[in-house]
Length: 255
Image (cartoon, rainbow, N blue to C red):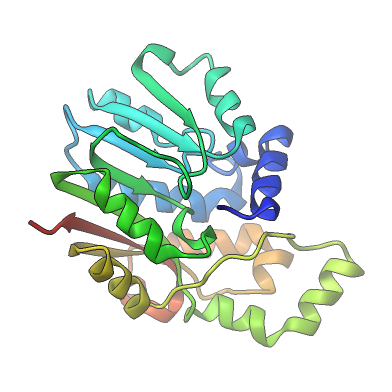
């Protein structure tokens, strides 16, 4: 199952309202989440009439795109607080969506889906191989899956690892930084091997959150760092894997 530390982290984020704010276009620090969602929608393209399952749906950032496309939406999350934010959102019609409070790792799911989406999802499980197999089992024969992966080999995470002492001082002395739960970081090869193990074939890959002004500048000068990132996202620098904080993989179930 998902660790209590991870579950408690997301419960608290939902209670404070911070998680919903991560997709706020007026908040510069939301940029990595906003660009990830934008590119996810681009990759999914036409989903009219499809049965879509949002794995680790959080506060439902994907819902408007799915419902406006006349697709069926099912959101799964282990955080009841996250799901309650969706239910209490007056801009979301509850008649168009289904929400399931469960730990995907342990839950039995009988329904089959055309599309699975997991943003900020796979990295929090202790056994991702088990999760990818389960994803395959709940998909229709011609189904597709899209997962996001934090890039283990990017410049930003390399800076974080090298500047461990600086990170400690910023957190403890200056109270600057985040206390995120532990998650698995991925290389591109590791992600591709995961899909192969789950019996999926790759359709496309997109990099997201291209940045040259990395940690600790992202903590000290977030507005500047994310502004630069938004300016270079569509340039050739987006093709350089080590400059991207994450990548999205769209895959199809093997016949």
